[in-house]
Length: 192
Ligand SMILES: C[S@@+](CC[C@H](N)C(=O)[O-])C[C@H]1O[C@@H](n2cnc3c(N)ncnc32)[C@H](O)[C@@H]1O
Image 1 (cartoon, helix red, strand yellow):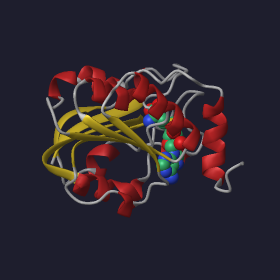
Image 2 (cartoon, rainbow, N blue to C red):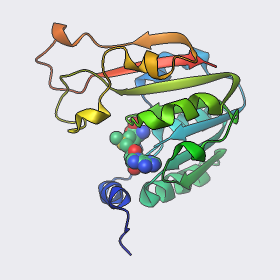
Image 3 (cartoon, helix red, strand yellow):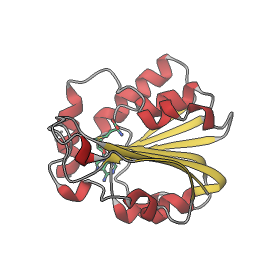
Image 4 (cartoon, rainbow, N blue to C red):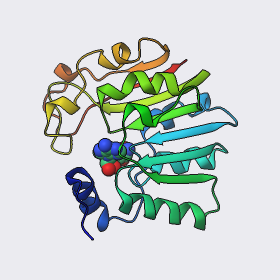
């Protein structure tokens, strides 16, 4: 039965014909040495869960949440097949979904809901790590979001997570390569 939630219907349609999970995001690859050896991890707006699978393979008990039940079913199937410690849940994210001091690591990529950011900071345990990467800058390529509300302003990740201690921050210098037809993304690794 088609979903009544237009956001869910849109993403379900997109994931219907996609099987392979996305590759892990650069924020995880570049900063793999910062991953804890154990603990509870959460990927928000995980899609097919390329990051969540990577975290589970690294030995973290991992939860993966997304509004698309199609993506969640595919991810849970793959995790079961590979016997990974990963639980995938279909959730329409709201600040109250997150709880307080519940996770040692939270990962978000390709998703921006500014209203969630204080709850994300609070959902980390003391010492817990945030890995956040998303679209940044006034100019971005064809595969980025068309709605400018979903694109970070300069330095915005640092402001959104000002209660955390930044460990690594990377932001593209758009003016230096204005012709590149690919989305530019900023990333932050920060500790509570
Ligand atoms: C651009 S995709 C990014 C997927 C994945 N994180 C990645 O980097 O490949 C955005 C994701 O956000 C999810 N999403 C959109 N609105 C949501 C909501 N209200 N609650 C939970 N997930 C949502 C979509 O289903 C989609 O999987």
